[in-house]
Amino acid sequence: MIYLDNNATTKVAPEVKQTMDPFCCDDYGNPSALYDFGTRTRRVVEESRKDVAQLLGAKTEREIMFTSGGTESNHTAIYSALKARPNRKHIVTSQVEHSSIRNLCQVLSQEGYKIISVGVSKDGALNWEEFEAALTDDVAIVSIMWANNETGVLFPIERIAALVKQKGILFHTDAIQAIGKIPINLAQIPVDYLSFSAHKFHGPKGIGALYVREGTPFAPLFFGGRQERDRRAGTENVPGIVGLNCALQLAVRALDQEPFRIANLRDQLEHELITKIPESFMNGKQSQRIPNTTNITIPGIEAEAFLIRLNQKGIAASSGSACLTGALEPSHVLQAMGHSEELAFSSLRFSLSRYTTAEDIEAAIRIIPSLVDELRKLNQKGKLVYGSSSH
Image (cartoon, rainbow, N blue to C red; front, side, top):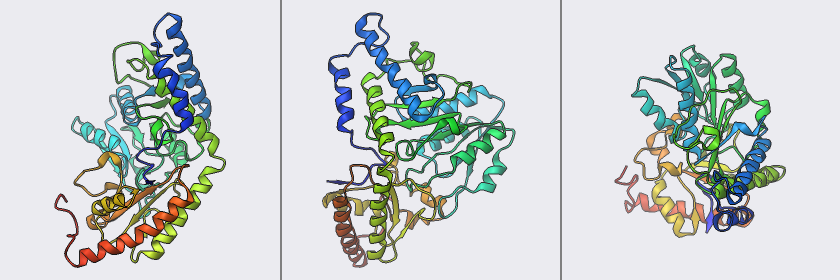
């Protein structure tokens, strides 16, 4: 299989699995226990917390809280800000956020909060004038993703954070697609809350973290035991925590060379597909992007049908967020960028990783254009109806 859906999830690195194994079967003690078998795992958890803090440029390990993943981290940050500033009823976000933010905001809008979703340009860049105008005294929190999961477009988080803090507003960034792909130093950026998830950078699923800058308001999402310094009840996922730590160390170490190699492979894929597939075009190409992601619109195909055929050829890709697979709606990200429903349903995402090889890309370049031609001919003959009945 040629795996080109790394924004959905990544292969667990062999070094990560090796690091985790002892804590699944041998050193399985509960970190809250007082006997040596438990205190050994407690030390490992705290050492991992310290390592993660240093890798991200956090001031202290106390700023790192381990969670079950990105969604929990996102929700914890939003709820913490709302509870800290109960008289502020506005939340500012963007039209291209992940569903874990969008759907939470939809729930909050039913509870009396006003959600201000800032638009983007046709290239996916944030509408800056609209964003500035939204930063009023009624805003409790601003939540803007660092890198878009569908297009890879990067938002200028440094500039955004500086403006938001100047206005005295709490700021959260969903950095789930950015961590491990671009250098991040939290000592240099006034972010209050930052979310990330291990399975996006070759760590295990079910473990993530929330960075909470020292002095920033915080309110627990879960209640029960006193784990995570009374911030998150529940027995710690020790194998996951050590796996996250190992995966982040590997990812940060690879930042010197891998992003350039991956970007070159991505650019090769884009160039060849655009050259060989008439009328196709890239989404977000004129904006700054993370190095591994490309999103292409191919008029005349239906993405869902195409991906099934592509899978039969041994290539795994997607049409957008894995969290929305099976959704009946076209991509909200591409629609925010000005696409019609028809074009949004004709768009594909390919996302690479440090395990992607030149041979993988060469094979994809051989297979994808011919498959597009085949499906377009079937569509023209009426054997493949454009847009499935589920749409």
